[in-house]
Figure 1 (tube, rainbow, N blue to C red):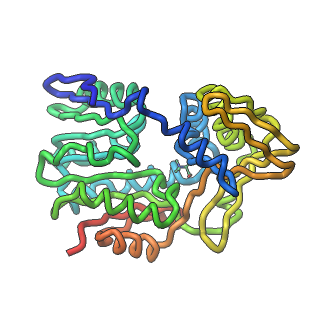
Figure 2 (cartoon, rainbow, N blue to C red):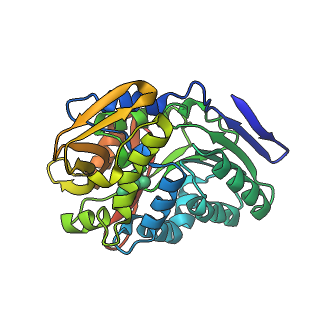
Length: 331
Ligand code: AVJ
């Protein structure tokens, strides 16, 4: 662990170490030697990828971000009253604009004590921490820089009476079902009896609406998808030609998830020098880059149950596009 900042109001620690961080190399070696090639979606987010994702959030077709924000804006006071939240832990905190809505409601209720942003990006955590202690009187920020798939147990023990651990944006949908339940079980370990999980999930709906959100008319999502090849080229000294891969997004109606893939438009032979791996793509062969599961209330409740949690609140928009749910430890 590296302590990055330690003042009266802000403490930031990093659990990422560049030397030991072989995550991309391992995932590329595993993923590109599988019978069906795949790369985990977390590698889409370098600086450029994060910028493209920000652009996606503002697209007319991409409803999840603005819908979740509207639910949060409408219901934050109720969520804060229901939970009595004194501490907000946010997994994948980013610029903390969603957190602000909750922090405002906590401040208005007079319960706000601390915020624990958890993100892979050191400067994102630092910037948010520095701004938020200015904005909220007496707020303590304990930032954790890490990968929440690997460093979740590094979240500090709760300091206050009621903690809310938030995982927003529908990020939980990136985990396949089994991994999702294991992950929720690890989140459960962060909760005491009076603490709650606040989970954002995109909901099952008309496939055409979903598919448009992942294949926008301006091609931003296509560029976001292909960006993972630029990441591999740069980080692992590879020679992918991103333009030779077509963006594919479809809703799998059986599994109720969206898949993003990259389809080689012609045979491609790719050398990934840093790991000494040559990979062949046949014409038309696809590489899976993301699944994004869509939920029903029953599925959320079942996943919670399987993870030792119970559904304790359900907040949705009038069109039922997106939902926020609260969970507590099962009795
Ligand atoms: C950040 C995982 C919630 O699945 O909708 C957006 C990522 N992928 N467009 C999602 C994403 C394509 C997004 N999450």
